[in-house]
Image (cartoon, rainbow, N blue to C red; front, side, top):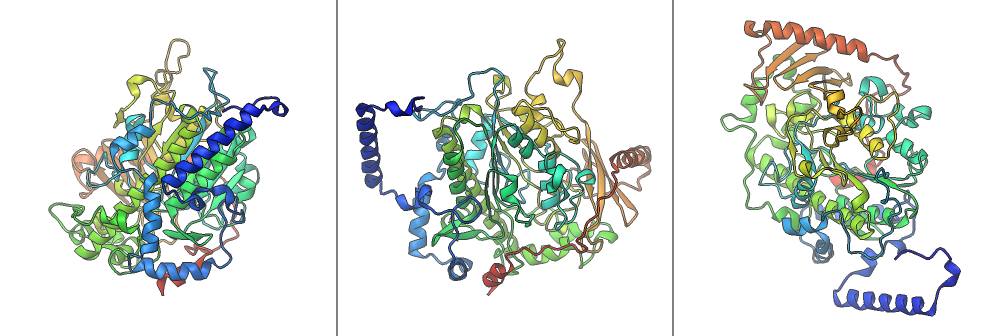
Length: 590
């Protein structure tokens, strides 16, 4: 219900009506056996960012809980809490479909303030899980259960050729916020996130929206541990590095915690402002370096049970991981590389592979469930018909392809990530379309968000508003695509971190061919993407491809020259994977 402009003129009738509604809700809650303590977010004290409070004695609680979780014991108390949470989870695709209605809501508390204008500013919701490959959706792989995200795609668009411009967590996230290739934002080292500093932060989409009056928030993984989230966003709740957390002595999965924090954000937001919220789910990213089968991933027991009777196909039908690894050039085959080391930890036997992939799929299903709960809350607030929802990820994962684990290399499994866009402005003939033609990129998201707010991109941004692919935007009788065709190739880059551990590379990617330069090794690869979509057979030395090699090599060098920027100084000298919560990781390993 909208509040009266004159709050001093409340009537007894209004008071009795509100009392009656409250009584009804309490009776319903008791009848439904709802755990009011779990869902009453306003009762939590705020001491960790702006999010849910973290207990002072969490370390001991986490240590005890993690021992149980690591063994996957079915503790009755934990199970009962998880079952209560499951009331909000997607059970079927039909349940998910109900949440994404035609942008309408039956909720009486419709507090939208900005939906009347044809050129209204959109709210922005970004759902951004970690290490999620493009084909890890039910729409691509029927073994994976993601009914909500599949439903969201059917009410919007899904882009199958979406890719990142750099496949590593923090560099990709810097591109996400800045709308710049890594060669421009230069946030190459984890300890030197240049894009967050000074005037450069004012060039990011989130700060530009904030300057335009948006209420902004960030939840989950941030990675740049310089304690500046409270300066960057109106609402902030940073947590990462684990699959399970405790808050106020309650045990939550990372995706559940993100959902609860998002609900609080929506309750706290000023009703007269648009919102922009980025949610960086930590799962399905692995935790630690445990070599026991599947132990780097810790889903809920009941979610994991969804995959108990499933056999996950290995990457190739007619060869093993090891045989695929031998097809890599010699300069990429080394027991010192991160890709080989992590393959050995995670996938070296069939048991390792099955346990790892089942746990990964279970975590993906959990993110799907929590995403449903977040969008459901947006609908309850009457905001769904004015909210742009984007689902994507920071990079893909090999999962044993090429005999590798991790990401980094410019192969398809590493660089392609999901992209789902739900946009209430989308014309009917575009709804449900699966775009398998256009290269959309991580660098495009910044301009897409700004476009939804009616703002022009910052001059330093290098992407393009993806809505050009589904909104006509007529000018002088021509659509945006008629005025400027979409890209038919793109540049991938990965700067040096530790050449022996993760080699530097860049690539020119087209639908027919991919040309790769291993920079410091002074080696090249060419793949015929039509004949060899799995990139197993390098044709760089095949004389039939010499003309293509020469042309793409020259074009790649031209692009690299165009992308060159003055180097920014970085005080941090060493590449470092270690998170500040190292003591928590040690406790998990005991």
